[in-house]
Picture: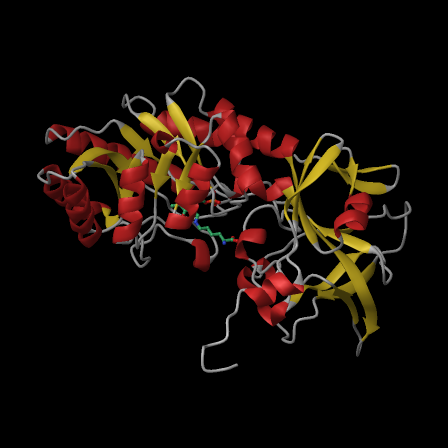
Length: 422
Ligand code: LLP
């Protein structure tokens, strides 16, 4: 469910016309819906109701300050994976006790930043990291709260680039070795064990791998407790998929996911943490672009947009499918046509869709990519010296630019010439 619908023949975000936003901020731009973000957060709240829990939004999906503040104000915690994300969470007013720190390569500086600023827990992914964190905490006269991320060797059945729960992936400690590592952690003066963590991948469209992984986690908790190790939290990671795909295959509902959580780990007396990113932000955002040219190729038509792979890299990187719709509502029964939808960047990888069947679009007309609220703006770059595109947040019938488009001067101003060039 989202709040992007045609009203009076024009695609709107909530009650704001995308054509009006385009006229004011120019194209391309990202636009997010407050109502959708709120609703998605609440869906998870409802799914976990009755269990003590904290939803730690995986802000890597969309870390715009306005987006994380909106979620933080609803009560969300944050899952951060870098010092920069930690700083964003703090800047958005998220208290340290609601921030979890994930990631395989936390540096000493990042550990120190979080220990000094306040942190709910570090999700530790290796023994060297555990030793490092113990050292850093002791040097600061602090104790670092930790979970250990276990790798359950479960196939999440998702795209290879975003699967994380198999033993061949770089993530976590093999679950079979976990008890041993917990024992080591228990003896460290700079470490306090608070729980267990698992995350098996992203864009999961099947709940069975979750069930398998969470059962293994429940077994591990029992084993750890039998050794006298206190486990009071279980962080179950994120990964619930959203519908991107043309066959309209419906991914599982958060409600059904909640039932699996309840069934597998619900009666262990632990606080449950989850780290959803995509499901909260993905369908809460669109990328809006203008058609520059419609080019007739050899047996193909190219829809050449002013957005490119640097703005939305998912199709190039994961062969991802994003629905592309005209902003002006097509006339009923209009004959569909077929386009290769591309950007202006000088490589063939800059292709959003091949042979996409969609209503005809003319030069100068706007199109919107759906499901672009997660892993869209955050993965963008200035490749081809295309300035980062603006982000807009809509709330009811008004909107605000929450990241402006930099001017060429601002973009160029970040480079400096060495002192020997004058
Ligand atoms: N927790 C951890 C430890 C993660 O690594 C991730 C995502 C999440 C939570 C959130 O997963 P989500 O609920 O969003 O699926 N750029 C890729 C997705 C990368 C996901 C990385 N980790 C894409 O555009 O599909």
